[in-house]
Length: 147
Image (cartoon, rainbow, N blue to C red; front, side, top):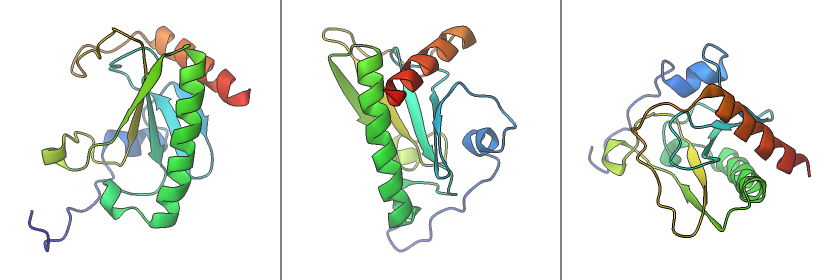
């Protein structure tokens, strides 16, 4: 895609759109009128959380600035809570835009991964995590969000 070409259209069939519509379950951490945070089903580390806008945004480049501002505030809140909930040494927060940038689900999302000294990230293409573990992790982060 050239710099002047129009970006691809948003696909309402992507898995995150289905999660937002309640068609696919998730281990929910947090939700407000503009944002949803939930556990990644193929976590790269304990507490790997996804934070997405409810707005129909394919990438970082096509979300309205005011919606992005609200989203990044929630990314920071979730990151702070995830670090506390897992007593992590640090965090990795990342976002991919378009296939060439590593994006595989074409709904804007931020990954928040608590990190521990000397522990590498697991591959993202690994198997799905146990649903009970994801639910427990979501509850731990949600509790940290509540203070």
